[in-house]
Length: 141
Length: 265
Image 1 (cartoon, each protein chain N blue to C red):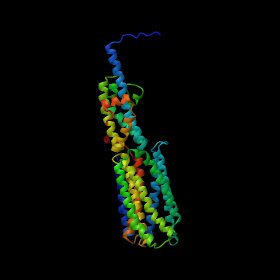
Image 2: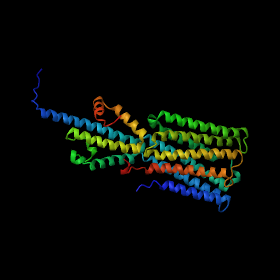
Image 3: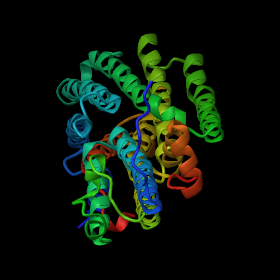
Image 4: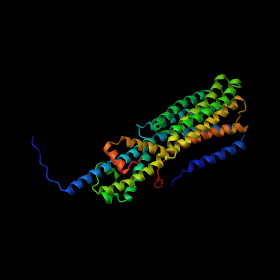
């Protein structure tokens, strides 16, 4: 069995790949939260409320330079593209956005339903995302 | 601009107007009966239409859509009962049978409403706080026992006017109303504090008003004290009954007009 020889990788390549991987995972975690909240609102509050929730979250993102930071037009593009930025900065941006999303969802769903939704979202996370969430608390306890 | 005050303001204006008409009685008692029944029919129809419209705020596959359709169907049945009852009361007051065909429509109407409320509550039940649910169940059990002791038991002891079947129907209404109030309260307990709890607040108020109206009506009929426009008990029955429909309509209206403002976060 022949072994394929990989080209040597520099340290900066490694950190860039690690950064990309972290960006992808933290983006996925953020998407789990936002889409989970939107789905809960759609389920109990109806189409219009869910649409308004998505729109207001996007408005908040655009006001907070989402486009300038990531090059993505809005948050829905996260489903197709991973922002290529510093993972630390992206994490703090997602933390701020998730706080806004949760505050808005609390206003719509009420505390009890929001907690229950977040609880089921946390329980549905695969182990890697659960570990990442434990570190960054995008979906807090 | 958010116009949340429109519906409550309209309800308060209607309450003031109806109370004035009830006390003053322009045109006599028969005119008051006519006005009351026309209002019942109008608001029952409005509540049914708004509940149906509320269903369309949800996706087709959602249980909440089925729930509102079922609630709307029950309200259509109640509106049909109101039309029939209004016809009997306005045009043939001397020949109203007890129980009347309207009673069948009213009682049948409870079935889709109960099912609709259960369908709505089921997905929410997982998020329900066990302690709050227990408190609600205890409170409603106390209310039900009070109803049985204060109204049903005396009615059984001395049936008064009307047939046994008619008395049975009159006793059934407050209990069925309390059952609806309980299920809607359970939904409200999960949703309270959120925008989506607003429609259910009105629905709970509506069911409690119906329970009050039906309870006092059964008591008044049993003791032969119920006569539109003649005493306070009848006034409370008629007002609570009208505002049961008004609150149900406000519930549907709230669901239809729910929206999030930027300042909400």
